Amino acid sequence: MAIYKNPIWRWTINLLYPAIIFMFQSWGPILDSWVFPILFAALFCFLWSDVKDMLASTVLTWGVAIPIWWYFIERPKPTFGAEHFAAHLWLIVLMYVIFVLIPQMLILTTRLRVMNYYWK
Image (cartoon, rainbow, N blue to C red; front, side, top):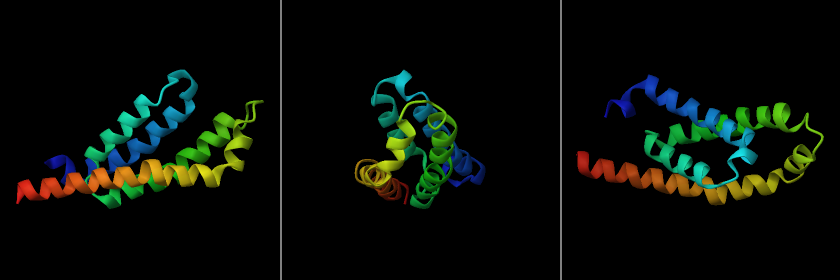
């Protein structure tokens, strides 16, 4: 399993997650479905090599991708998307933690336990 031990692959996966989240947020109205983002998040649960990598990708997403999306995609539009996003950020973060971060951590830790059980 060279993909989980090679630092180049690990950082590539860690950096791809925020980049693809940015694309999903930018093209959200075009996708018009939750299926692809849910499948995408589940796929990355099988690609991350450790919980620290998942948390690094999450910090990059919330620290870089979401502000860039907000500033360059939502803010220049005459709609109220940026204002709604800023006003409800606390609720968005809470919902993210409950419905995305905790299930991702559970899937990832379960996968890591299964891999440790079968590879020892």
